[in-house]
Structure formats: C-alpha cells, structure tokens
Length: 576
Image (tube, rainbow, N blue to C red; front, side, top):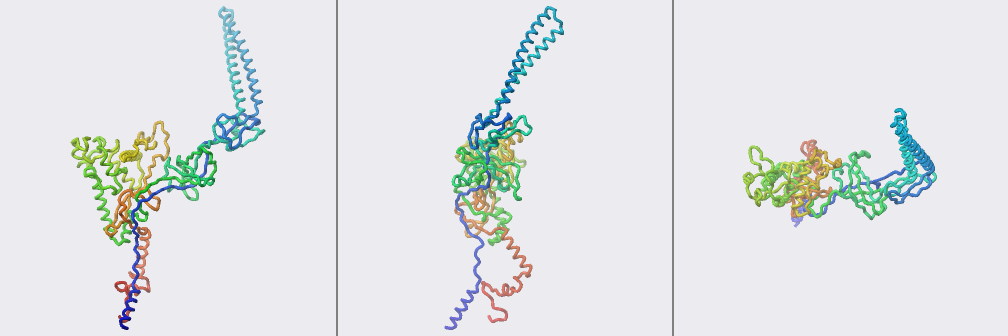
C-alpha cells in the first residue's frame, strides 16, 4: 500500500513538473459582414464666402447713417448719406457754365452763318472766314465740356448717397454720424471703410487636413459640421476645393480645405469654431476582416514561421495560385469566365458575370495581335469575322470594351492600383468608362461615362491639358483608390493555408474584402511582423552570446535538465 501511495505521489510530482502547453500564437476570427465608414476629422472656423467693404466716393461729414450691424439689406438700399452741400454747389456752377456755353454757341453759329454768306459774295477774306469757323468749333466744344461737367456734378451729388452694393448682412460698422470721411476715389489712402457686408446665406469652413489624409479628400465629398452653439444639430456641407499650398504648424504639414454650407436660417455666424467630419467612404453590409490578419509579400515569411509553416512552401503555394489566376483570367472569355471573387476581379472593377453579359466588341476597338503569335483575346472566329456571340462577330462569352479603351490599358490600370501608383489622365478616363459600364450592367441608373470624369481629366485627355472654355482646377484629376492586394492565412482542413485577397475600404480596424474570401472562411490573427522579427533577432542574439545554449548559468537547467516529454531529468550524479 505504501508503495502504491509513493507511486501516486511520484506521478503527481512528475505531472506538476511538466511544462504548461503554450497558448497558440494566433486567433481564429470568422469573416463577417459589417458596415465600414471612413472619415477625416479636422477643426476649422466659419467664415463668409463673399465679403464687401462699403466705401463712399464722396468726402465730407456723415449726415445720416441708416444701417446697423446685423441688418439684412438688399442691393441698392440707402445706407449712408454724406453732406451734399459741396456737390450741390458744384452742380449749380456746372449748370450756369452750360448756359453760358449754349449762348456762346448760338452767337458763334450766327457769326458763322453771316461769314459764309459774305465769303460767298466775295466780301469777306478767306482768313476771316476761317476764323469764324474756328470760333464756332470752339463754342461747340465748350458746350460739350459744360454738359459733361453737369453730368459729373450730378454723379458726385448722387455719390453722397451710399447704397448697398450687394444683398447681405451688415457684419461691421466703422463710422458714426457726424464723422468726416475721405473719398475712396480721390484719396491716396483708399478712403474710409464705412461698413462691411457679407452674404451669409451660404458660408464656408476653412479647415486644415493632415497630408496623410489629403489624398483621399475630393471636391464634392459630403461633410458634417458641428458647432458648439448647436451641439445636437449637425450641418451638412460639401467640399468645395483643396488649396494647393500647404501650411506647416508645429512641424505638421497640412492643407487648407474649404467646405461650403447652406445657411438659409442664419444659424451659423462668422468666427464660430467648427468640428468637421469629411465622409470619405462608406460600405454597408460588406465582408470584412481585421487589419491584423492582412500580410504583405514582404512579411509573409515571418508569419509562416509563427504558424510553423515553411516560408518557401508558402511562397510556392502563392506563386502557383497567382499563375493559375492569371491563366484563368486570360481565357475567361473563351472558357466561360473565372470564379467570382478571386484576386480582385478584372481591371476596372468588372466581374466575370458582367463581362460575360456584355456584348462583343468590334474588331476596331481591340488591340492588334502580337507578333509571333495570336492575340490571346482574339479567337479564330474573330479573325474570320465569325458570327458567334449572338450574331455580333464575337465568340461566345466575349465582352465589349468602351470606345477608346484597350485591354493593355486595363492591365496597366490594375497594375498601378495594386502598386498604389497614380493614374494618367487617359487611364482615369478609361477607368471611369469601365465603371460606368459596370453600373449599367448591374442594373443601376445608367450614367454616361463622361459625367463621372472631372473637367481637368477630360481637358487633359482631349487637348493635352488645355481645355476650351473650361476652368481647370489643380488636382481635379486625383483618383485615389482604396485597398490593395494582401495575403491572409485561413483555416482549410484544420491547417493554416495562405490565400491572396483583394481589399477595399478600410477604417484602420477592419478592411472590406472585395474578393478571395467568403462568409464560411476563418482568418488567423497573427502578431505584427515587426514584433515577430524583433523576437527572432532577440533569440538569435542570445544564441550567439551563449554559444547555442541558454542564458549563462542556466545551461544545465535548460539543456541538460530537461527530458523528453517536458519532464525534468534528475541531476547529475543522482539516482534515477
């Protein structure tokens, strides 16, 4: 009995000495549907769009002031009346001079008439006749000068009544009744500012957006503005433009963005501090995975080591899958298309189903065959002008490209989107046309492709960037593309398997999956690549320091004090 109790105690001791099973280095997360909203937040100030300084062309004392700050006035309303005595006196003198000029003209005209009669009768000399004609011309010129002087005097008298140049609100008053002001047209200083007006029916927010987010901001994006005065009432606006010149504050580079807001109720006032949220993108009920599950080609090797996989085998698996995907895509039209949701779909966002439903394209829109072999997109029926594909001269499963768009362009567009390069104006036009075709095929409201092309891109495509009769806006051709190509590890048959996926919109926590995964898949969340690499470097450094063993002084315990199965071996010299 004692021997049995001793064996049980020894077994319990051995069990207690066993090493604990380390927790898994990854977490399995199912692919689910969720809403993804991406926005850029910034702070700004409410300011009016149109501001006008009201000045007077007349100088003198202010006799009457009919406007106060906050008053809404219409264009032409009387605001200020200046002392009119000097302009009235000038007008009376001009009118008197005009009467004198009229009398002088009548006298000169009578003398000219008599001189003409006498010269015809050869009673008057030629010199005297010319002198009479000159006096008549001078009298006429004097009358014209007098008439213009009268008109100028009347205008100066009318300038003593300062009227509203626009319809708007008085936001500032700089003078009071009885103050002497200077003329805006006669003084070198530019005159005295009487009032300041602004049209507050529509205001704007000038905000600063960080340079990391400015590439995603486009004119026309919807924005939500909140002010402290109305915390529970958001205001809707639209991005008007992005200033090309940056502003640096505390070593942070930012760009001013103007957002226009309707203010018909007059709730927003100039100078209010505003919080701006620019809605960059939104997806409803889409497949999404955590960003921690995404891996790039550079760090897929370290992720494979964490999962206990051979990095070379993982690279071979991905290369084989990419090769099969490219082969399937090249023969997709003839073999009935490829599977939906693999490797991002064809360029331009068209799915295989949309490509198969699109009518065939004419031979003039297709690229020329390559030398040394037939074009992979051209079949024998097309070379012979066959009648396949519904009698339109294309094989079954062919699709129509928009006019002026070639497969080489679509391939280049896809390559640039995956690598994050900017598209040229011609490629932006081709991408917009393909997207319009996709919307039309998916049953959405058809819209001409040209409507989705910005004026800058359209002008650059048509005339080398010099549009006819169109205002060109710097940066209007920006076509930021979300997402890219990544690698995830999924559980297939209980084994981690690498898979290439295409992502779309991301909110920095989750990314939209456009192709490569389904709701039945489960992705693996792994430590960050930098953390794995740091752990590997630390482990290698310790091995170099200790000659391949553990820490100094602990070699016996780690290397020699451990037995198979995780049990502790007896010390040297001890009895087993």
